[in-house]
Length: 153
Image 1 (cartoon, rainbow, N blue to C red):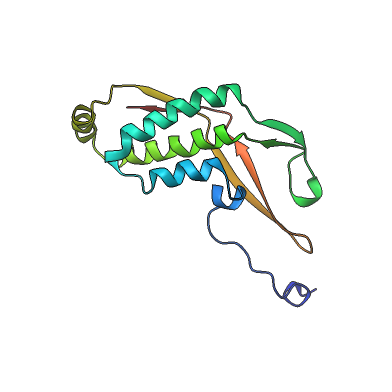
Image 2 (cartoon, rainbow, N blue to C red):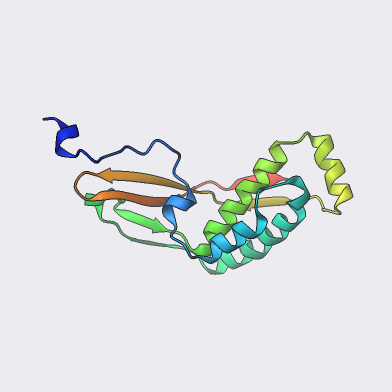
């Protein structure tokens, strides 16, 4: 059987699956992410403030498991994160990216310059995946890590 002839318009997705694939606009998640813009070390304090604010909200507004449609690639018990959980994950990943881009001495200097206290942030990363179901389309799903990510700042 020749799949190319059976599904001639099929194009495999070769880029990483991201929140932009999973979450449709408009959303407060995008509003806050767009407010930050490109992550820059000068914005670390602002990103930390947002992280701490939404981390508290995420504890009160957790996602939920629902019976998934296995025929279109969902897990039997599919997890649907809350907007707050998505935000905490995205902000936490931005913080990690910034922290890993500088040496410990550079981070120490930045913390002093911007009056950022030493702290530890903890969050559950949310990752995304897609499933192509021939004849039905492409479906995106979120998965919440079972282990917390811990970042020392």
